[in-house]
Image 1 (cartoon, rainbow over the protein chains, first blue to last red):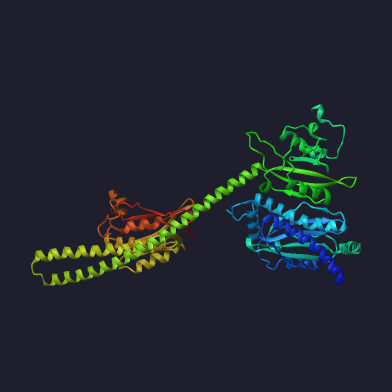
Image 2 (image 1 turned 90 degrees about the horizontal axis):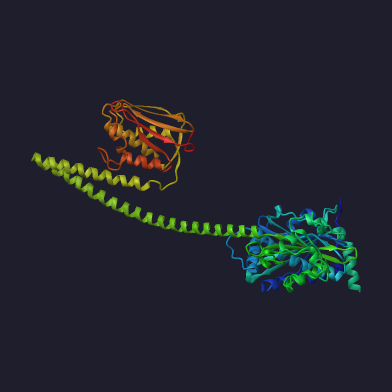
Length: 205
Length: 370
């Protein structure tokens, strides 16, 4: 069993937070463009957590129905990035984006495809900006949609032997449209050294 | 096999010819590297005429600024892009038989080349049928929801109207019964004071008529409650014994063989046996015995009520269930049929005149249990 990894230093944390902020900021900008509404973005929460605690850290209410679009990535650093909403917010977003009158509460195939595309646009902007800054190449899965309570949604972290992951979570609120959600990144802890090295290289350069 | 289909140069994408989706691969300058068979079929454009050509040469409107921006991300960052039918309708215009345009979901996947650059692989899924079915389903669902809402509204309106009618009926009944009590009281006093036999006879007739009115008014109280509350399960043995106990049976004995039979019926179900026993006592003339038992009829059941009174004449077997028919109020058997009908039970008289009355209640499968 792994022991808890050493915490990030303050400098590393600052550099890392700045990098994440660039990605999250671009994602918020993308959401802003899509909805034409003001997005309130909270400061990212960055924390090393046990993989078994992941679900509880991702969302507060275990019984709430959530809509989740995720993409996993592998390369110099690996993990999963996702956009997670309460189902009601997800429906509002689809309705606004597609001019889709909310005649029913179902996530049918049309709405799932729409939400997957929205998630794809937002997540691409997060990951694209981070990999562009770091100048590294990462391969991605096709975005996937799931719906349910936290216990029924599987966060597809890389099946390595590590007991811990690095969770980065940014909450966003579009008050005018009654939409809220989280942009997540769960990093495989084994990738941390590579990632920190890449960050240091960029900040030094 | 057509000789033109055998291609001397292998691009590595040939396997995608077997997929049931459209596949086109572009390189960074948007030149078509690969065009699969499904796309040949959908568009009528052969791969020989489009490969090595810019995609815009055949589809000038395909790479809109929005698509182009995200396609650029595929080439530069290697991030896949998905395009949903609701936000784009289509990426590659394909005309279907009949002139409608195909509705598509498109995924662009980066394919890393040996040179270190990316190709963009467009996987184009025809979701026209699926989309139309979903939209049709949504319309049906909306219509059904609308109808349910309308029905709920109508039911609520009826409930309120029914409540008001019941209140009116209750108040009116109360007032009529008060007046009848006064009337009967004064008729009684008049009878005591009347010496003239002819006048006495008229007062008797008046008293009888007033009593009939009273019973008819009281009947409205029972009928008002009919079907108002949800049906429940009744233990038949308990119901029969309880109703018999509330009536003056005299020398008439009651025999039951019900073995825990339960029937799903309106809460007024006890009135069925009250009225049957009351009829036997009133009109049986020579009745000594009432029997209640059941018999199976396939998966259904018959509940049988028999007495050994004078019975019902053959020409009256059906008419006795009509409202107003009979020697007393003419409402008892009518009420019985109405009560039973609420949960799909039915009743008929099947006895032989002079041998006694025999009422058979038909109970379908599901409306009885033990």
